[in-house]
Length: 436
Image (cartoon, rainbow, N blue to C red; front, side, top):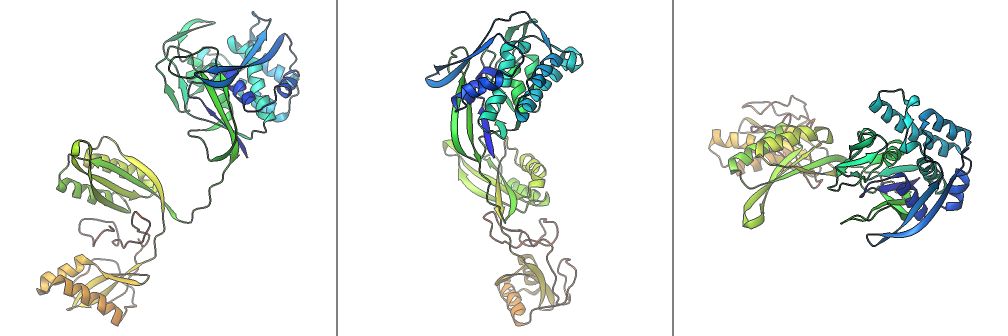
């Protein structure tokens, strides 16, 4: 699947989108041939190589003799239909003009097909839109994506007089699409450019994973201070990521330099209560030599908002970062053995048996024995006679029958993807050894 990704670091306009595609290799004569099917004359399409901010690009000039005709949305859709363009070209052009009509209709409280287009109804705008759709077809583009869209500020002059910048139609068209303001009193994104983005692009963000085949730059009409007045397009075939057989997880982190050890320990416990698979602390040194800690929490993607909220609330951090990871947890179960007449849970995994420390500590407190001896005896007892009878998962009590129980939370793993043995049931401060 061939994708065209528009990098709108200085906004986007109809002529800039068309210029970028021509610069990336769309044959201008083929594009003109498709445009010639439009049942309207009085226009020419010329291209010029230019520099903007030291970067080479293509400037499109659509020259027309017409100056006063105002077309309705229905009229323009009729022109496109009458041209009998290739299906994908016509479909894309119809979608762009429909997006424009819907936005203008909401702004002027008119049915979309009765909207009168002024600037975007001129021949130059029609050629820009249909020409961009034609260029996409010439290049065999199947999918369109964009970066966040840059917009200016201040005011600009339009057919209705002085209007805010970005224009109301631009704001309406970019609803739901990532945008960012630039401190320039220049119309970086026009209604035509915004309509192309709204109608044709189905994703917005960084450059998609692709094998890059070509790139091009479409130039705006003027030079800008401190940035090239260009729209970039990158063409390529999408790269399908290899399937991941691990369990997806999200690692959330925050650096904290103003919390006590008690507060940090409480935060770790609360993160586990909130559903984190694991939570831990790492000592770090921050700027100016300040000692600090990174608080980490590993959680299921569905619980990101919940765990992130706890991390922010308990640490007082002003920001939380996150990254997607995979983990490969090993199956494990919890069983019980008898030590001095008292039940001790042991975690049993592939090639390893480990006694639960909290249970062993309780036995040590009640018998006066060293805890390390209780741990060793519990693990040795399992090896001597592995239990085989299922029981509930409640906490160990004195005199409980030696049994085997299964851990329904066997999917716990540490932050490197290695198996780590977790508590049975929700993690609390009383649970045995949450995974480290």
